[in-house]
Image: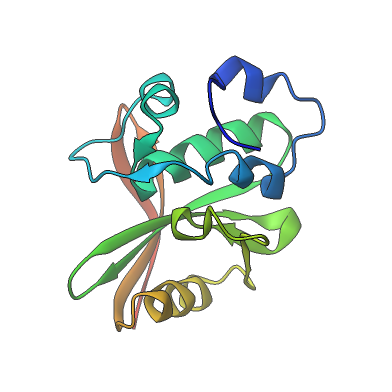
Length: 147
């Protein structure tokens, strides 16, 4: 299953869309670093983006499907990476795992656990991790943990 031609409405119209099914739609998307978060339609149409484009869309769509989601930014020495934690599945969705057969990363949901697993993927130490929400297009941090 790929996101070839999928629109936001088509994702939202799927009555039983699970987090794992959601991730599989992005298996063939390309990585393209952006300075700002793309709109869902731009991200879906271009089939290219970065971790915050993916996590923001995942959080929005899965919340509409009744899931409890948390956006988490992990700050490391050389980069920041954003994922979407889903309480009901006790796992997070990570753009780096989009082409894996089992793309959900198991986690207890703590910022420390998510940060350690994200930093491990990058072979890096994490400095801090923050749960955040977007308000008027800007991240607003609601909880932060330091390493």
